[in-house]
Length: 181
Image (cartoon, rainbow, N blue to C red):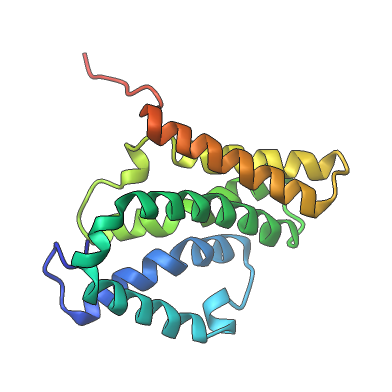
């Protein structure tokens, strides 16, 4: 997206880094969870900048694998939602806040990317994206509340969230859009 917006190398690196680390950073700031993940582990910056540069260099070749990107994005969404729930739960936050922080971890990087690229955020108009993050977090936390082993709860939430996201893509499922009269 940064290349489509004719951004220079700094812009490309910034957009890539914000996309990768933005959700966790917003979550940590909202929860007062310091240091931020990338501050505690500065190698995350090098990894995200490097990945952005590699993706830019290979953009034409990688464009052929759109379906693989959708699969990886779906897996990333549900995985980061669960990770976000785990991080938020360590702060002692209420379960509703924990689930919301899981969703923020999963979606906020892409939201910030779209804002930086002067585009209406895809998460606000795309097939069941944030909803899947909320569902995944709620399923995960619900299982933990019922005493399900954390590894089992993670596997079930990952699987269900991933399948729901893929169904949403395949069937173009969306939330209703309110129209102006």
